[in-house]
Image (cartoon, rainbow, N blue to C red):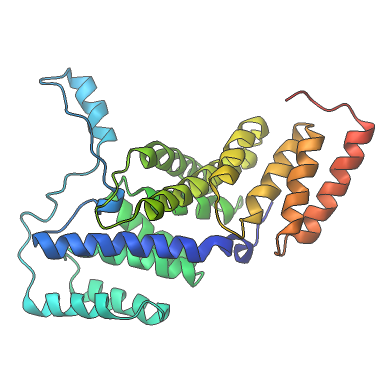
Length: 308
């Protein structure tokens, strides 16, 4: 099953805005503290207090779950006036010219490869290359960002969804990529509800940001399960993804996938409903979804449907 990347980009604008917002918050905090941030505030957790002297295994498990420490740059040299000027030039540049912004971030990282502002640049490049549909570059900078900030929920979610949707079963590392998408999805789903709202973000914007993250994470996980032929497990993930989507123009891919998963499990009425919804959304999937709805209705009229 191959899904066109252009179809996957239905919510690219919303995602790009959210990732840009995250990098902007990180930039603001860097400017205020004069220190680099291992976790931008929009994606930062407030973990519960640790028990004193926990058992070794328990402590190891907790260490795996906690965000990377915020003191990554504590031993790095302070940035030079030239670096600060270059950083300011990047942040002041209009976001409307995505290609120019991408090039500025690339140039900054080449000139200052150990900069405290790396997370800001990595997030900006994930956003920029997602918006311009340059998937390999987006995935490369997503990996770099997650190496620094393993709990960056929006990046985890977009990486998971992108890997799942552009998956090539003939690739030599196909199985590893599928496992990676599954791990990223589950981690984003686990982390997102724990995020703390930044003071400079409205309640509505923060809620929308979390919904966008969960939509992509659940949708990515649902597709991973479909690719593994775990259709029953895919259904609740895809239903969650659709529930979390609050955009006027919803992503048709998840409706298509939900229809497919329901059809494979003989839930023909549910399949017809999902395909029908997909067919109402303008995209290249419309003919496929219309045909899927017709076939599911026929199957429901001639075959016994499985109980929900």
